[in-house]
Image (cartoon, rainbow, N blue to C red; front, side):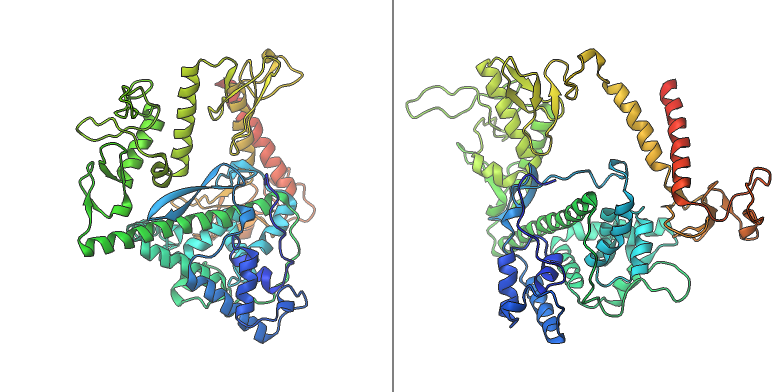
Length: 557
């Protein structure tokens, strides 16, 4: 999934590997130096024969130093591996840098179907990521996350922070849980410094620090007596088998990257808040000439000619409106007339740059370097595309073709029939004539069109969703699926019983009587469900029925 080859991963079960598991984007050289500074023998940094108690203490001290230190040198091999965006901090403003692309959109359940290898390996990957959870605790959190690594990863991280659906352990009352989660999330968003502390705490816990009673409570899942989701002491010498599933490995990296990106955004906001507070305390704030709020000079951007000052937030909103809403950078079609002429007094000409939005009608532009610092990566990427498009239109270039997926434009020779989009996050290959996906060997009239593709996707999504069971108890609707055991399923949230075969609610006074009690029965005459069945066969039957039903709906549309 990675265009550029990353640096070699340290061997598993070594002190260096322990550091990289918790800080996936750290520069390996810096990690080695941290281990040497706490007294670890250089020959033991990549030793695979286990660690002594003294060495364990050194590893813990090195992790604590990294947590308390905040920022650290990043692994250069993980930068520039795609066209997605990552946010950093320069002078109190946002700076865009490139990050990698991935095999799937792991935030969507329909983006891929987990393989059997994925299901076998995902628990161990989560046990590596969260050394404070028991194996049974990982399995139960995974069930609540519909068997997906990234969803479970996010769920556990949010539990440590005390936000989202895990808010303060209110599992039983969904309305109360949602209200508490919303309040907690709003509180953190309003106080980026507090959220930055929450991210540092999460990193410390993953490095082996003891959980607080509140964190243990948020990680707790209702279960039979004797079950505990967390361990009294974090795992130290856990030796997992090497993961082989390509999608799972990609999803592990995706989850770590997204958490690191969020931490960077939070660090940016926290640093900006500290700058603002210091400027406000010193009485050096300036007024934004759009929203009229008071901001530190580091939080502001000025137009090139007149020096009108605007806060970063106002400039970002204005830029988003121009590039995503209106579709140009200054005014009708090609923008405004720029107020800037050359040194010889030549009249100003039409500009393709983002123009000033001061109330007096100023048409000056903004320095490109300031826009790069102030605008998020996606906005800056679209800004660049609009500039390139306008320049091509003015030049009247022949042979210019546009990617039907991301609107990127490039020149194609008359002999080229396939447009290979070079944008890292797109890479779409399209036919120059019809704009559909590349179909070498087929005529344009023989290609499946968008409405047909949508219908096929609807059927595929219905088949994928058929594996998931929804709690039939009204007011709950928790989604889950079976990993092993009998067909009498207990909802992870409300504990209501349901049948995995027919999906019906099983009353407590019925219990196992819902299932056939006759050995070797074929269930054709008893009309009851089997207590034990093959999971794979059940899923195949359910997906087939769901696919046929969805296909009929598509045909009727």
